[in-house]
Image (cartoon, rainbow, N blue to C red; front, side, top):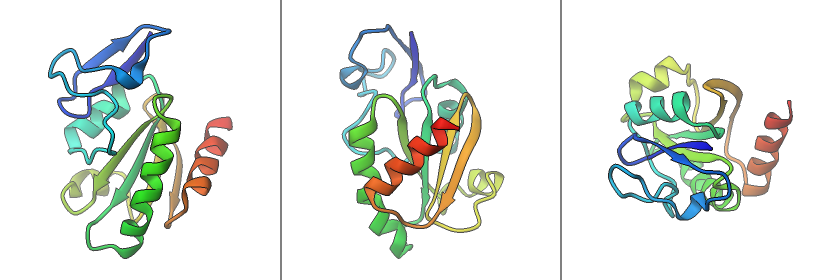
Length: 143
């Protein structure tokens, strides 16, 4: 059984083993559990994702004015398409969610964070192509 947190409403959904999580919908709001585009989340939804997800959570901290962030966005999305539903991919706009960005100690963007079992297990700054993002995630999860 996996706990998948809805990116739209923050509700925790239990997905039985063997069920296709990619096509799953939230039991509370009906939104797709794994939307086609990587969702930009608010602080409360981010906190629920990290605390309640039974799958690792990868977060791209970005800002709309940041050139490297705009370059990395499509690469992050490509990685999400190839690695979901084994991992949750989220975007966090550091301009709109300043408190959580500050709490996380974000000093530069883009910064990618990897959370597993509610704890940060990896962090890297700078834009990367999709193959490098996937390799970084796999390396962090092997540790």
